[in-house]
Length: 123
Image 1 (tube, helix red, strand yellow):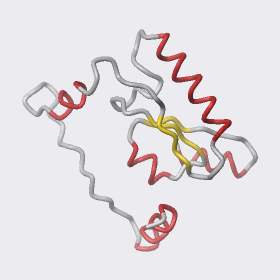
Image 2 (tube, one colour):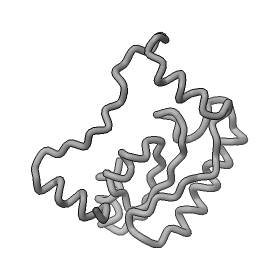
Image 3 (tube, one colour):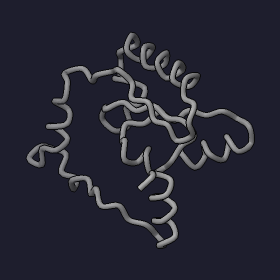
Image 4 (cartoon, helix red, strand yellow):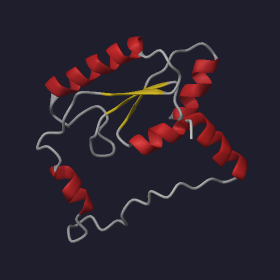
């Protein structure tokens, strides 16, 4: 998503990435992005909730106009219905979802990739 956004931006087409995994969005370095602390795959909002989906779309469009710095990520003022209960369910290994916990170790294919990512992130 971020690579495509950068490609399009380089050709004069404005883009906005909407993400639910902040670490991925940060390291993808999109030209502009909004973030919602929602379950993966639900960047448009909860299913069957058109009121919240419309609010998300409106906030995203407002951020599209207000973001001035490349790589800026704006958190949207949205909460998942039921609060953070989805995080506990996603982390519960006794439930039906038995995937491995998310590995937060940053890995790079080449040392140059690491240097470029750290420079872009300001580390």
